[in-house]
Length: 202
Length: 202
DNA sequence: ACCTTCGTTAACCAAATGGTTAAATTAAAT
DNA sequence: ATTTAATTTAACCATTTGGTTAACGAAGGT
Image 1 (cartoon, each protein chain N blue to C red):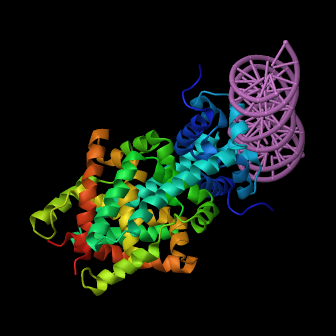
Image 2: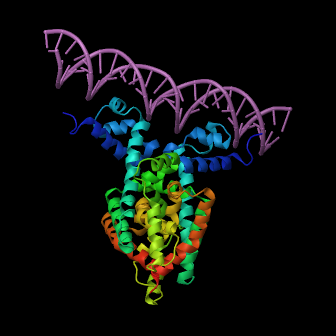
């Protein structure tokens, strides 16, 4: 008579939607209950408090952010392909999860400790050392110009993530429709890759 | 016996600090009153409601974001110097206002209409058309490679702003101290400029 | 049939929160 | 000095909000 799947999963799905949209402070337990089509008390029955529920959603999101990077940073592709793969994967992931960046960025900003502890434990934290090694190796082989690896990494993730975080502003300033926006982001995959590789040419 | 300057300004300063830190939903009127060292009722006496007060702070912040770009996009420097100036200015501004990006990004995301109307009215909205013209002109003069101007603009602002939005995450991942962080951002001014100009080399 | 356990609900509660009011205090004008 | 207007404060108010409770119903075991 009520929703479809089991209540537990319904709640998580609803909480994800509401928290992602409104953030921890802006989200209302009632909103989540309504979205899940259940009574507010059920939220507390399954997940003791707002904070506990939020933590689950946030950790899931943070893991998502880390995982995308990790998978690629640890692969053993040649340097150029690695860059291309990182960018392709990241932008693809963001097209599917457009709310992720602002949500994570904002909550990290609200409570930095949360991400610190999340990073420390669990093995899914991206191995930037591996990335740095690769950059250094590519430099020594004269495949790319000299650049501080961390700065390069910043450039890459900046160009991938920022447009999604600033989407409403960008669409306003540029006057792009939703359709044009999607095309713009699809274009970016190749464009950013080329941009970076050109900048790195020896 | 109480604060220094006139109450009105005290309130604005306090509101700015609290809103920037906690966002609209997370900020408490009492926090702002405490920060300003005054009674909560004063907030309502001078600025009718939380929303009204917030709007002032947000508009100021949005204008700040726009203004930095506008001033430079409209200057008539040669192309390369223009790029360098944009980046220098932007990063300098962000070092002084580290909370700006997340605040603006988050609130834009919470309520896109706000930025739309802010952009439409008032003459301080950045003239991206001027920027596009300049890029196109530089292309025709063969000073730079062909690139869609909007994508170039996205790349530039991404690399400038994103690191500040993701600062806690970046410091965690890289293990940088506050001092190292500042150095890293100072370095970026020259580094990003060079990175972009290299990527644009014909 | 009866009991127990789990899932669910409506009603309720205390704290927090944005906002108001009326009185008190200070500053300005006459 | 007296009146008037602007500031400031403490106490209050209504609503919202996260959280709890007790009762109810369904499912399964005996």
